[in-house]
Length: 251
Ligand code: IYR
Image (cartoon, rainbow, N blue to C red; front, side):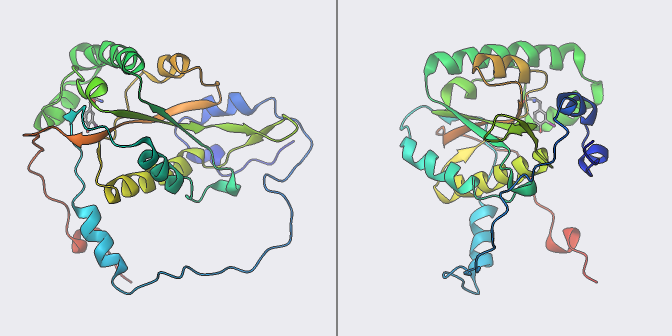
């Protein structure tokens, strides 16, 4: 039998993921091809102010909830950002992510209908009063115009397991953390490209959205990300970020 990896005890939805992995074959096979290692060539663009400039870039990122449909950024920009996201590290280099980019208005409309139907239940009955109260400063409700206004919706799926070349299932260690890191790099790349986005995690919509897009059952929706330019007059909550001293402890 497979030895039990750390994933067994750390992921929130481990039971669900266990079931999906139960019928893995017994024969051991490394996730990554066993080949001689090659020399590491460090990046050539290193500069001492790089991180400061990166902070300035990322400090300007805000989640926005109102997008304009035009102009529509070139798909090649979105592709470049997703290519950057694909450089993320992943457990045993399994690269357990799938990025679905939606441009077609009719698909965006179907996504909006699925999400609004669930969000209406979330806001009106499913969720605790404290949830509704905590969200009040964000001025959100179940109506999601951004899902049809934004020129692109990127649906980020984590692959809870994968397949080797011979079609056998393979374990995707830390698939959620790996995909989340990749999504973070995507946010950075979008920011560098001058695009805005909104990280959303539509509650209870994963299976319906997965079916809509005909994605296989090893893929679970992690993030639904509308991407584009802010509508004229777009506003954001007046929030401040924690200072370095609030987030950093040195030893
Ligand atoms: N997903 C819901 C509610 C929501 C939840 C959190 I936590 C937020 O930071 C923002 C919204 C919605 O999109 O309305």
